[in-house]
Amino acid sequence: MEVNIKGQEISYPIYISNTGLENLKNLILDEINHKNYVVVFSKKVYNLYAKILDFPKDKTLILPDGEKEKNFKNYQKILDFLLSKKLKREDYVIAVGGGVIGDITGFSASSYMRGINFIQVPTTLLASTDSSVGGKTAINTKFGKNLIGAFYQPKAVFININFLKTLDNKQFKSGLGEVIKYGFIEKSCNPDNEPYLINFLNEYYDKILARDIFVLKNLIQICVELKKTVVEKDEKESNLRKILNYGHTYGHVVEALTNYKKYTHGQCVVEGIKFALKLAYNLNVIDKEYKFLCEDLIKKFGYESLKTFDKNKIIDIMISDKKATDEYIKFILPTNYATVGQFDYTPDELKEML
Image 1 (cartoon, rainbow, N blue to C red):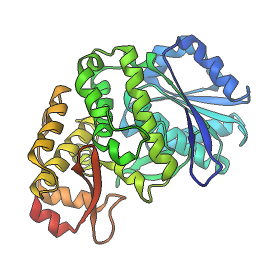
Image 2 (cartoon, rainbow, N blue to C red):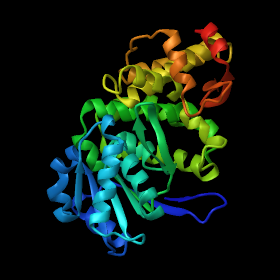
Image 3 (tube, one colour):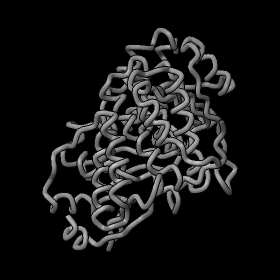
Image 4 (cartoon, helix red, strand yellow):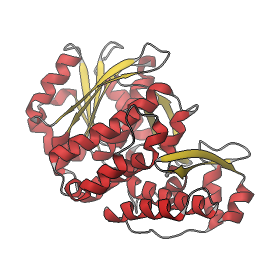
């Protein structure tokens, strides 16, 4: 599979495989024509896979795990490491880990010498289906999540299903949050095929939860195809790509109000989807049957409702969201089967609705 950004000379391959991980290093080195490189690992992934991947220790930087590690300190650490290894713009930095490692390494690559080559090797379901494709890179600050970043496309993405065998259940379900999102926005992605992800999820949810490797490969392929379709048409979120934020406006509120510690990103996205479903139903944008269909699918994957928050605190965080304007808070809401659209509300309007 290959991403080709519309109107630009940007393209890169996405490899989705369930073959042995012992071959992955050589596949990557062949892809980069054996040029100089460094590898940025998450600590957990390094402990599990350092021996089998066999990258040289002197080319390896290991960062702690967790959303809080996507910060200025670790951004500086990556840049210092690249400088210490005297990497040039034609060299490569390889990110091996989940979304946090991919985001911060990608942002570091975008700013090192105004842009160094970058390879994504996602090791979580969330990163494999969503964050590793599309070029969004960022770090967090005390003012909010992903407020400092850049659109910077990788040179290649290597997705290997075998990494998911050791993923803990909490992070696996976090990834499923983004997967479910794709089902609910599939028709709006304008894919070549008729939408079928909701049916796929309903039919195979038990095999997905059991981590059937062939079902997971198919599932990741579907999600990546949808992400690719959107990104190719709208790289920098000026129009179509906004639909990928379904569930994220309120989801980011939950993350912020719980200090990014209590719940995973995927849990918060699911909570944001449920918030959007309720809002759309109360506004008569969707009917009861579709709301029930969506909520029933969410229940099949074992997601429970999270705590509620004060509406004034909710509004305050939504106003500071990077997608908000001076006047409006922007919501992606469901409008029909597998279809969503953008709705703009003033803080006062939203406060009244809440």
